[in-house]
Length: 235
Image (tube, rainbow, N blue to C red; front, side, top):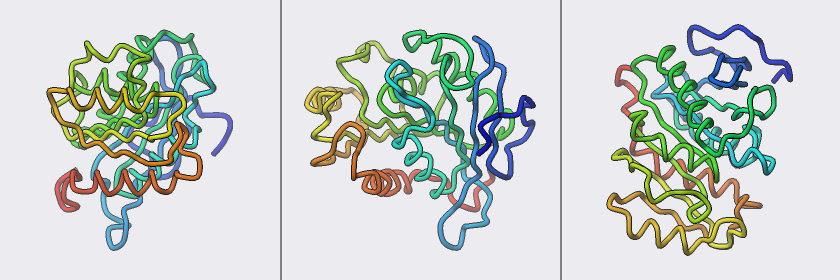
């Protein structure tokens, strides 16, 4: 992947890996897309949806190149989804400054608008890790996401109580040895929710899933495979 994104915004979803700048509310947003790589006999099939993935906290080293973000991307691409990663404002080539999740939500909205323009009939999945899962969750309902994946959601560190919860399939993955997000706080939060996300608890797993990334990949694919549209459904 080139370190210098192109400035021309694609008008269709790129057939190969692409790195470009998209006009956003605080300046340009740096974006990377990858086409679907469905498993087995479906390897050449039309994409079964598009997934937009949000990265962890910008002020603590979070970028779209984070290892957990890239394993989420790989998992969803292997399930047959086109994928979109992007840097929040102020990170990499993205312009602007950190905005406590508010401006970052606007960034996500622009990415989703572009995704729906280039793939107008494709199911939209949102995913995020840590801070990125907070941004994905707080926007899933009004962006009308078809599925949501939140990895190590930072419950207790951000305002989760007032978020309008989605009614789409929703996966929560939480490591039991997370040193950044308190695991029990996450488990208690899931337990009292009015909706019921699927919770995967991973034993002996830290916040950044050290030595457990392949297990995370399997957990995502196993949990979300049944929520994919059929391969022969219209995109």
